[in-house]
Structure formats: structure tokens, C-alpha cells
Image 1 (tube, one colour):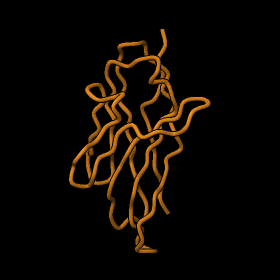
Image 2 (tube, one colour):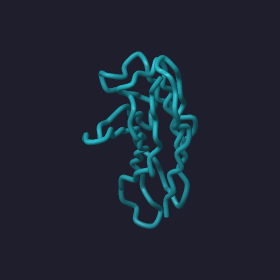
Image 3 (tube, one colour):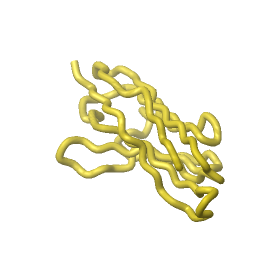
Length: 120
């Protein structure tokens, strides 16, 4: 029904940059908030950044001023990550609130996750 395809993870040195993207496809009627979460080993999954359908972003305090979330189009969200730190190392998950044509109800979908490793 819905596919969320993430890309852009990898290994980067401290102070470096990466850009994550997530593209939604399928029988989607509308998309509301799109977000990125991350989960480090042994820790809970936490919100990194979110952006509403109107383009209003919000960020975790730990990434403010370093990360920028954007909606490239109605079905794609990106996360530009600058000045990366070792503590940013985690699996990053795309999260999308949408309405399926088949059900006409709001549901939350998750991507498969992409690894980001910040290390020298």
C-alpha cells in the first residue's frame, strides 16, 4: 500500500555533513506531518525533526542549528545534517502521517531505517 524509501545514510567524520531523503509512494490520498526519528543502540527511538504539511518545522534541542528538515515536494522529506557529532550516530527512521485512499483514515508509517555513523 505504502512504501517509504530512505537514502543518504553512511559513515562521516565528526564535523562532516550528510543528507537523508525519504520518498513516499503508493495509494496515498494526502500526507500530513513528515518526520525523522533516530535510535542509537540500547536507547529509545527519539524525534529528531518534523515538518508539517504547511512547512512548519520543529527540532530536538540537540540538533537545533545543525540539522534542517525540508519537504522537497508533497511526498518527499529531507534532513540536511551539518556539523555532525559522534553522538548523532544512530539508525534514522522516516515517519509519515498520511491518509490512504482505501481507508480514508490517518495512519503512521515508518521507513526501514538508514544507518548514520559519525566517527573518525
